[in-house]
Amino acid sequence: MAMKKFINKPEDLTKEMLEGLVLAFPDLVEAGGSSGKLIINKKLREADRVTIVTMGGTGHEPALSGLVGEGMVDISVPGDVFAAPGPGDVVEAIRLADRGKGVLLVVLNHAGDMFAGGMAIKQAAKEGLNVKRVTTQEDIANAPRCDGENRRGLVGCVLLYHVAAAAAREGKSLDEVQSIAQRFADNMATVAVACKGATHPSTGEEIMSFGDDDMEIGAGQHGEGGGGRMKMKPADETADHMLKLLLDDLSVKKGEKLLVLVNGSGGSTLMEQLIVYRRCCKRLGELGITVAAGYAGELLTVQEAAGFQLCIVRVDDELLRLWKAPCKSAYFSK
Image (tube, rainbow, N blue to C red; front, side, top):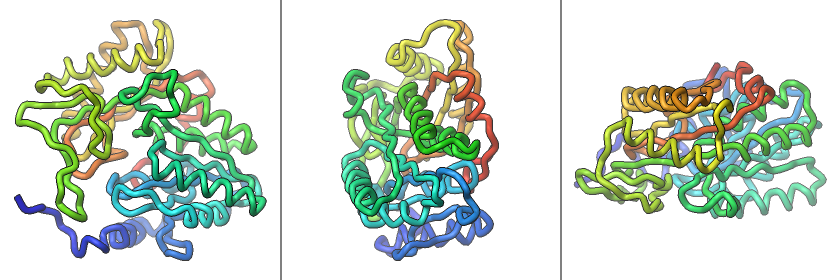
């Protein structure tokens, strides 16, 4: 079957998408850098605080560039579709972001991003730039918690952007912002379910295939298998199964407080996401666990893949206060 997407030349996908983003939200973001592809918080030049830089492939909109703004990301470094940007672009973003208080670089744990991020950190250090890194690696499906360095980064990065940015806006130092962001990352757990694969918009190739009545718990966002292939289940049964995996991974106890996120993957409706979120709240209440805050919607997608990512974060009073701080970006505001 021919790919049905409203695009022009495949080689122009990233460029044209970023141009559209800037034109749609001219009061919030601008394009910059030598490539013209860095997406920059329009108020960055006024910032007198620690700033936040992130990086990653396009194809996951609104993440990551749609999350640039006040109280969120200051500069996003986009790569091509499902591909990491080069380290040179990341170093340039760190230079541009630095307002004298230091820069926090947030990297999702995927091979290309980790390589580019690591190279950029080394180069930035040689230039005397004050930059520290936090890696998000909360996918419970592909490695146990004791082997966290091999866990993939999923939608939890979006929550972390806001908490780190809120801490920065309170005037905390780079060491303090990094410590808070790392504590948040250490208390995150995410698992995904997919029931329909996406097509790569450059090639039309399917990146994950399913039978008519199949779903997979633990699927990665680039088509990586999760080992949980099974027949389709109703929303409540799926949510209960995924929630138990997450609670066990974090060893969540009765009386604790959680931030809960249901993130749509691109091809499942908001109706479905809200039904799942409703079940999570009900089940957690039955277990004596408080849903202190939450969100349901599309923040990090995989083109038209159907399914969702369920993320929970154990929060204390400080993390909850930072989460509740206001922010404004193109596709996430509160």
